[in-house]
Amino acid sequence: MPMIRLPSVLLLLTLGCAPAASPPTAASPPTAAPVQAPSAAADGLDAEQQAWVDSTLASLTLRQKAGQVVFGWTGGEYVAADSPEMDRLLEMVERDGIGGLVISMGLPHSYAAKLNALQRRAPVPLLVTTDMENGPGMRLAGGYALPSLLPLGGGTSFPPVMALGAIGSDSLAYQVGRVIGREARAVGVHLTFGPVLDVNSNPLNPIINVRSFGENAGEVARLASAMSRGIRSAGLLSAGKHFPGHGDTEADTHIGFAAIRADRARLDSVELVPFRAAVRAGMDGMMVAHISMTGLEGPEAAPASLSPAITRDLLRRDLGFGGLVFTDAMNMGAVIRRYGQREPLLLAMEAGADVLLQPIDPREAVDAVVAAVQAGRVTPERLDGSVRRILAAKARAGLHRRRTTELDSVEAVVGARPHGELAQAVAERSITLVRDEAGQVPLAPGRRVLSITYAQPSDIMAGRAFDRELAAGGWTVASARVDDRTPADEYARLRALADSADVVVASAYVMPREHSGTVGARGGFPALVQSLATAGRPVVAVSFGSPYLVEAFPAVPAYLLAWGGAEVSQRAAARALAGEAAIGGRLPVSLPPRHPLGTGLTRPVRTAPGHP
Image 1: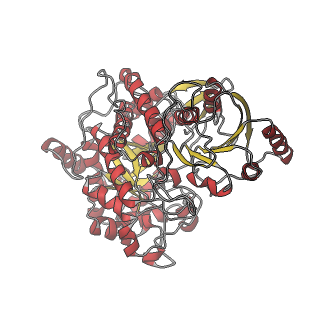
Image 2: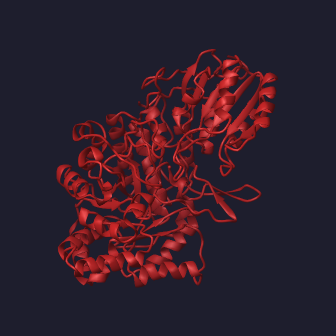
């Protein structure tokens, strides 16, 4: 998916087994507007829906049909009705007749108001899509005004889905999906690009990592299917990604070429397992990745999104998928650098894609499809098939009856208290204690804690809730923050401070980020943690992101995983260290050579404050 635009005056932060006790329910307040649930079958329409699809398709000109397969980008921020940005959007919607939108970050009411305005002007209802992998808060704000850091409120933020892999509960995965569905539909979104069906089998993968449920294909299939059922139960369509599996790559397709070298036997036993399960479950859509399947098609293989052998033959024919096929964003480096701007659009159509997602120039994309049909490169029947599937998805979302959302119902659903309680329960139950050689966890009461936070400068909230929660638990907390550019003399100062602390808590906020090319801690932070550990200092390393960071400081005696940097995860990790919450997560990935899949130490809740 594309990079997020950050407004200059508002920083929007992206916070992507059976339960031991009954978790909070995900039900929203009864004032929420009801939403029609999608049909369980990919092509299952009732008579009314089918009649609308048939009549709408018959009414469209060639150019209008071409517009339907193009989905343009918009931010979720507020725009005035007569602003240049609204002019741009209305040109896409009215003049170019695009079929849908992919919407990025914004505040809930801004989302709903903007989408309502565009829906009222669209000749055919727009199918609105977005990415809410780890909760609505990923797109619906999670924002803070600068410089005051005043929270602006927004959607519910969950930990990344690998946290659900650490819990292993179908019920919780379903409930998270249901919250995503309810909040997305409340603001006018109809389809989410998720769940992620990738099996993260490669620790060096720079872009999937904690966005995956784990490395066991069967567990990924089970948990993703449960989440998808929850999403669809709330009326939101679901499109799995990134077909045919992005978990075993070592490159980021936002930047350039990424390849899967697996042969068909390996794909059938690992990568394709969750996708087959999703097809059987009737998933509405699939996003095809810009990854080259060199193990199947040779060293010169085109990206899967542009390959008939992958979309038409493997996905459609072999897996039997009849739903909506999306390309990944068509402005990404993996296609633009190799093929230019226009040609990959037509290659994707020829390969079998239904939706050209986020081209650089939507009008040029529409023109290209029209020209391809007129020249015989794309047949009218081929185009009609895609348009019919797009219209069918719109009908399943109920857009043939109603295309706008009620602004008054947004605050009754988005960020509702039960949703936040569910997010906190998921965060706490996912905490995983990988090792604790000296029995430091939970921390002994009354100690002096040096809390060192490693995070990118843009992640201004990293460590704030965590340190605040630790201090509230009765410890004397000295806080420090480092990043890739921290100078050596600052690390020397921190080593000296560590000598006067009873315990050093070294926290790293390292998540997969587009265009970064790596998921690792850089600069002097790993060396600091490793040196403190080898010197025998009591150190607890906490990863608020990638579980594989322990490889950078293998001598650390205690290693705790919180999976993501959202405030719910920061609070959960602090509560676990304080003994105020039980620890029971299990590794959904292996951390060789010491920690196999399923590793996880358990810790009960302390019986009373100040007592072990």
